[in-house]
Image (cartoon, rainbow, N blue to C red; front, side, top):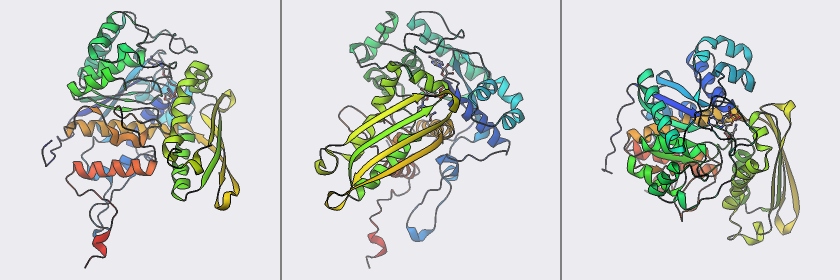
Length: 438
Ligand SMILES: NC(=O)c1ccc[n+]([C@@H]2O[C@H](COP(=O)([O-])OP(=O)(O)OC[C@H]3O[C@@H](n4cnc5c(N)ncnc54)[C@H](O)[C@@H]3O)[C@@H](O)[C@H]2O)c1
């Protein structure tokens, strides 16, 4: 990359396509329409509400992120996607019950027009779901059909660029196998209709093959397999994932770095949730839950580093439970009981009861990651893993052999420094000697 980075301007329209148009996706789309109409504010979105400090603390330069980097404006976004149900975004948002009906009714004419394209779906990978808006064909044919959908969407909506974010249900737990290792093996497996390729990988392949950046909001393998990383390097597509960092895990990644910073021990962390949306129903299936559990459990170990701090975190007992409880809908309740210990080993307890709205926390993340993936591509960042977007994920994808950074505040510093670097501003180390050296 040249010394001075040139970012192509965000001219024309950006398409944001989501495989899965349920609670998160409809909350995002309806929310952006509400913001455009001046009815709501983009709360929770770093790109829209966040400021970034530039230069020295004494310089007093703290522009809004969206005024600092050339992002696509909210008026220039077009939304679309795929789902196994034919519900329009209006219907999906009403079903999800996340945003108020009064607000959705004001946006009804626009939201009703956005309808999902037929999905690539197979119930083998999501046991608790069945729907009729589904494409037929071999996996290879389905990948070609998704590429055609994207091309048609671009033409019909006059989009210059497209980004894809998986907002579909959590699929069953899968491990990497030989068909995931190279592009050649993966394409051969698509043609063989191999069972190690779930729908999420078919969408990811289709987008990446077209050079379109792809984020994975669910905990499945999705786009992180070596074959798709290799393909993304070849086509210039950005990759990031996985599993939106919201709810209980967000709280964990806020609290745990604080305990470690103060050298407080943690003996146990018991997390339980009740939620009653469709995501909760899907996660009621043990095979889908296993995928989620793996992604949720990795967080504490990597923040607390028990191998480095055996006296503080060596015996940590970490348990995560998700219980499907329909009366709550999308309004999840997450309890954390944290057994910590301090000076001379004396025990203490912390209880967190987070009455959270999952999709309210997730929607701004989808907006941010789509805008930033598009920015990265216009800046000519090499294709493949975009670790600077780890800020948004429970289980950030990293190249083989590189451990993921889970600490929200380090992730935020990395994200901000990447934006400074992209804009040819000095990165900030927080050393601060310049305020004291003669
Ligand atoms: N809400 C959050 O805070 C949060 C946090 C982390 C991860 N996630 C993940 O994000 C995803 C979306 O969450 P949600 O609350 O919107 O769930 P949801 O159940 O409301 O929506 C998912 C949608 O995906 C559709 N779908 C499933 N398989 C599909 C396929 N192969 N192609 C197209 N559509 C498909 C379903 O029909 C459903 O409408 C889930 O995987 C969830 O685990 C959500």
